[in-house]
Amino acid sequence: MNIRFLKFSGVFALSFVSLSSLIGCGDDGSDFIDYAMTDTNIRLKNDYKNADGSNKDFFTQGIGEVTPVYYIDGDTTHFRLNDSDNKTLIKARYYGVDTPESTGAVEPYGKAAAEYTKSKIQNAYENGTVVISSLNLTSDAAPSVDSNGRYLCMVWINETTKDAPYDELYLLNLMLVQNGYSQVKNLDDFPEFKDTFTSAEMQARDHKLVMFSGEDDPNYNYGDYQVVSLLDIKNEVVETLKDKNHVNKYENARIRVRGTVAGYTNNILYLEQAFENEDTGEIEYAGINIFTGMQPIPSKYTKINTFLELSGLALTSENFGFQMTDVYSWPVRSGTDENDTVIINSADEIPEEYKIDARVVDAFDLDSENNENHFDYLFNWVELEQDIYIYDGYDSNNTPKEVTLYGKVGGENGREIPVNIYVPFLYTPDEDNKLDKYTTYKEYLGQTFRVSGIYSFHNRTDGTTDYQIVLRDSSDLVRII
Image (cartoon, rainbow, N blue to C red; front, side):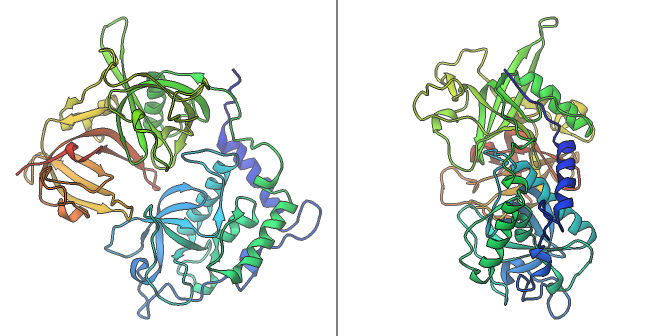
C-alpha cells in the first residue's frame, strides 16, 4: 500500500507564495487583472451601518458586519453579527461560486480553497472589515434561507481598514474565482456580474492557477487505505488536543477502521470500541466521529450496536478536530468493492465483546479544565450521574434548529462544574406529546435535565476547544419535573 503522508501547511505555504507572485503578472508575462479590486461595478450599493452608526441586522435587513465563528470549507463560513444580542449563527454559503469539496467528500484542491478563504477572512477580521449581504445589494430586505438553514451570501472584505466605507469593500466570492479556487456557479440573481465572473474564471484557466493547473494537488492523498485501530487514532487525537503543535501521524491518511455504532446525529456517525490491556487486564475505550456528508446514509449503518468496517480519509476539521470523512461508499445492498462500508455484525447479532453501553460518569470526570482524564471518554457514549441545570445557550439557524446549551451541576447553588450540551434537532420534552417541541435555547433556561449522549468537542476560531455532550435524540435529555 502506498500512503503518501503530506504536511499540508508547508506545501500550501509554498504554493500560496507561487500564486501570489502571479497576481499582477501572468505566467506568459501578460498583466493579471485583479477584477475584485478594480471592477467598480462589483461593489456594495447599500451601507452596512444604520444612520446612527450602529451595525445593521442581517436577519431583518439582509446586511451586517460579522465575526467568523467556524470555517467550514472554501465556500461556506459560519458567522455571528457584531454588536448584537442575537447569538444565532449565520451559516453563509457563498453565492455564485463552487469550490472543490473538503468536508463530507474531499476533492483535489478543496483544502487549498478552504485555507485561502480562511486566510482572507481572518486577515480582514483582525485588521479590517468583514460584511455579509443577502442577494439584495441595493436596499434593506430580510434574507432567505435554504432547506439546510444556510443563507446565500455575498461576502465583502477590506483587509486593511476597520469600519471601511461600504464602497471600499471587495467581494471574496470573486476573489475565489479569479485566483483559481472556484468555478463560477449560478449567477442568475446578478446578471450584471456574470461577465466579470466569467472573465475572471477564464483568466484563471489561462494562467493555470490552482485547480486549473492541470497538475495533481500536492496536498491530496491519491494513495490506498491502511488498517488502523481506533485506539491508535485516539492516542494521536489526545496528543493533538494536549499539544497544538503535535502533528497527527494519520493526518491526510486513507484509513480502514472497525467499531461499534454509538450514535448518529447531524450527519455524524460515532464509532466506539473497547480494548483490553494484555498486561493489566484493564479496559480502555476509543472512538471516532465520522462525517457522512450532507446526504442521508442507509439506516442499517446507523443502528446503535452495529459493528462496522469502513474506509475513508482522516482529516482535521476546523470545527470538530481530527475526524474521518470522505467514506468510500455506503451501499444499499452488499457491495463488491473491498473498500465499501460493511456490516460485520448487526445490532441483533453482535458478539458481547463488541457491544457497548453508556458509560456512567460523574460530571467531574468530564471537567476539561480540572481533569485531564476527561480524554478517556472522547467520542464515547456517556450518561451523567448528576442532573444538569441550564443557565444559558445560543441558537443556530439550521433547519431543524440546532441549539447549544450551557449547563452546570446541581442547580443554581450546586458545584459549578460546566457541562455544554449540543442539541442538533427539535427537542421533544414530553414523549406523550410529540407536537410540543423546543425551538430556541431560551425554552431550556432555568430547567434541570438528566443527560446522556456522545462526549465530543468543537474548535473555535480563537483557538480554544469546547467540550460538549452531543444528543442523539430526545431520549438523551430527560426533563426533571
